[in-house]
Image 1 (cartoon, helix red, strand yellow):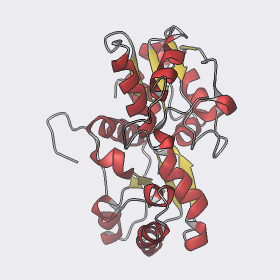
Image 2: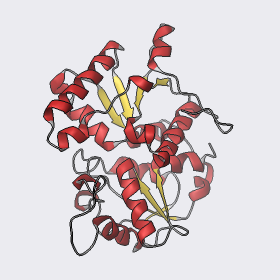
Image 3: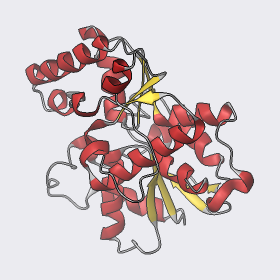
Length: 268
């Protein structure tokens, strides 16, 4: 990460800890979006600030982290997936990594469910679960609900977090900490509508049709009356943000990741 005047966080690497004979309690798997997408890098920083604030001993792989291979496998390139996965597993096992947290549901699903068949066996946690744990342990507390108290927030379920891994309550419990009014969209949880990224609309122009799927989903979010759309996936963030732009509501409705909401509420 770039050193900026606003930098008030520390991001140790596995190599640095290993050089000192130390091991982290958890490896933070940043992911491609968290590393290279300008918007989602803000989520990475927010999550790191929370980890620093509560004193979690963590580390990242830095330049040793490569793509999990998820896009390659979804696109049908099994050979490339296995090459990328085996490379990552060699690095992770070399550092004796046992526990991984990531903010990306696509990385989460691949690391948790698909790496074991290739020899990569780790406890993998999505950051919504990790944040929920910090709240339950009393390590993250908000006096009076923070800056989002009383505001309407709706949560968009990520397909790979929800339907693929049945994680619905952790992100909602994190939002409850904000003491905001959580308003559900008509289609949510097991019946939640995909933002379109899972159908590769993130990478290409949509097929001809009546309406873009992210616009359809954004209309459902706006119908709740919420001024904040909470997400827990980098791809959902882009698709929902583009939907808000399509509806010309950027000034009145914001899209934030769970980590950003918690960090803002704590003035981190």
